[in-house]
Image 1 (cartoon, one colour):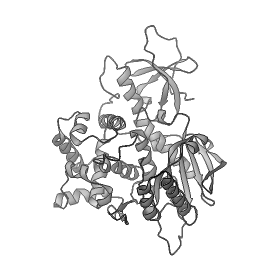
Image 2 (spheres, helix red, strand yellow):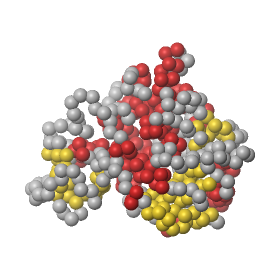
Image 3 (cartoon, one colour):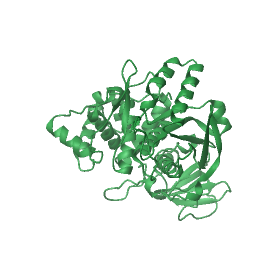
Image 4 (cartoon, helix red, strand yellow):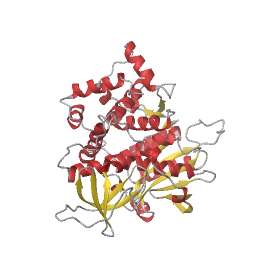
Length: 433
């Protein structure tokens, strides 16, 4: 299934105890705090003491909470604004090898969090019904069931928020739109509508690209007008996913998603990629170096890590805007094993220089696997997740991906060569799978 990437684009914490506010405590602005199982609370940080942190909620109550019950993003925030005098580490370090949590899988999701058939939204002449979850509005065509996608989206939202301290604040009181269209009627019509929107705004080049490639893709990101977004409480970026039935029309390619089951590989790829781009804040259209390595790699990493396989291809356009599909290894369940074997045989010679210069438009199977491996490496330990969070913040500020030498510095390494050495060491290890 092909991804048309067109982005121009009250918790009761376990063990909490109430007590009086200590004298001389540090008070910061309220923010959203997140636990591994998905509960949240808006509170301000007061102070840390050993492995505990003190928070003050909206009612002025003081909560004493173990750091280990809070997200990596929360611990990033704690380390920056209230570092423990006894410890310099970002996250408490248990003895032995640390197994990374899987917030998307471990959160407790209640179907009651989804408000079904909540209303209607029109995009041009196309009317979509929608359901609402805490952070999403799922617009859907007639005959499409959005329930599993609503749960998946919330799980992926929690996963991103757990690892990135500033992510939850980017939503504030807005939701993200996910548009699930039928493949025969609404998907082509939505493409026509978006093309016309781009042309009317003077973006002829983008409109031409959409015209030539829209029907080849299974998903893309579109921009809603500021008025439409404001009227419906939405972010301006919306994800479109093309839905297919069990038996697609004979004259049409089977690209899209069936929406059956929560852990759909294609939907996981699409939504996790769009969420990390929201966290990173987007990049300049002129700053293309490293986008493939970081963002395409992340989408494949999350797809394979959370669903156990990859089914997603990438849309590629030549200079004449002719669209084709680029795909990874045929065995979507064993990219790591095949990549290792190809490196041992000398068929693949990995280098950060080549990876950072790569793009989706010329990516082969080996390139996709290398991007996957690099993203998995960057997020493979709690300490590396610290660096990954800083990397996303850097991109958000600079509107471009730092070069490999700068990423090395973020990760506490001397230079690009040291970063490449650690990456390749990880790829050859048993931890990469």
